[in-house]
Amino acid sequence: MNNKNQTIYIIDALRSPIGKLYGALSHIRPDDLASLVIQELIAKNNLEKASIDGVILGCANQAGEDNRNVARMASLLAGLPYSAVATTINSLCSSGMEAIISASRSIALGEGDCYIAGGIESMSRSPLITSKVDKSTVNSLIGWRFVNPKIYAACPTLSMPETAELLAKNYNINRDLQDEYAYQSRLKYQTALERSIWSEEILPIKDHKNKLWQIDEQHRILSLDLLSKLPKLVENGHCISSGNAARIGDGAAIVALASESYIKRHNIQPLAQVKTWASAACHPSNMGLSAVAATQKVMQRTDLQLQELDWIEMSESFAVQALVCIQELGLDPEKVNPYGGALTAGNPISVSAARLVVSLAKEMGRNPNVKNGLAAACAGLGTGAALILEQA
Image (spheres, one colour):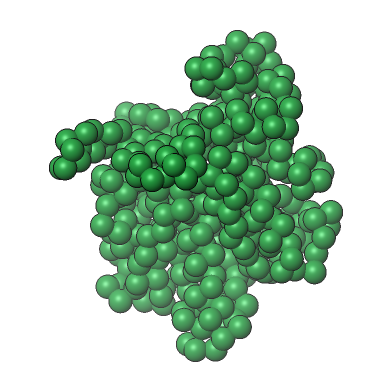
């Protein structure tokens, strides 16, 4: 295939439940977890493995079992042919969406017809790392490690909760507002759960005790009173708590993408069309604003106005981050994460942005009233990504 300017479609989208840190999915290697979702995605849609040009996955850790190109390992474990190329991308929280963007770009340029793309992360299985040079040992779970001293001079090496505290201070968003947002996110997730929305995108997986998990392990309703009493995450902070910050964990979120010629050739009814995308960046200390920058950039590549978007899936790494994005972009809060977000589902680093695309594509596939939608993600170090889907 070498026809450029191909239209790109999402054939289908699927994800695992999101497991708690050291919880339900912690017994599964990341390459195995990704391969499980890939295999089901292929089988469910009767895709010919030989027709898949490649696998592109985002993964932020890559220090343990997810080393040496986890996308390639997952591809081989899923039984794809040796000829299927595989690439692993690391842009922290936006990695999974960047993988989907990379696959979309390859299709648009005529480099391939069909790709598997998304994010994989097993934070429970992230190792301790020891430097051979200075013998220092760091936990690779999350955050900065082996920081270049020159980075200290260039910009503050803030933790993610510290960047959220900075946003709250700069935008004057107090804890009550953040807790209220987190509470509403959980209620929306519960409503969607009762409507069986989540079962349409989640592949049930058994834990080490043979219990079948069909929903995200982290979800539970917390009262506003309880949320207000949860401890702060930053020692000298004022408002970021374990209740208004998304919890890390384990998971995989993956989509199958194809060109228009592939769709027609195989008589496939896709979920959605990938219209356009953008990546953007801002100061690392303002990492939550990178979703704003990416959204503004992607909107310049479409004829749509923000107010015309029917559905928006936005990062919820922190309640304050989501609130600031809504405020800065002038979004209708009712259109943002209508089924809740990472504050209740969980936030495995590279999976978080891919999960936004999975949820958006699934909604567009079942709801003809959603003519278009935006998925936008922020990421550590101030990089962000955004993607616009339209009805197929």
